[in-house]
Length: 58
Image (cartoon, rainbow, N blue to C red; front, top):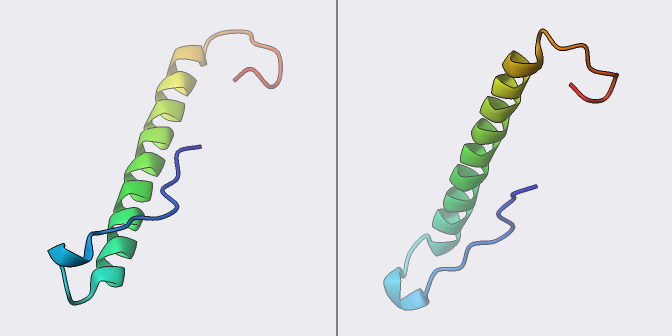
């Protein structure tokens, strides 16, 4: 699974709201990963829709 656990910004880049920005960046990356995973699953389901695959392979 592709999860961002933590984002660290150099203190010299931002003095205020650094922690909030780090959390927002991590949330945005995780949201993008979820969308990619969902898109991949949908494409795979479309490709295997007519195949006679055993349970667990779809």
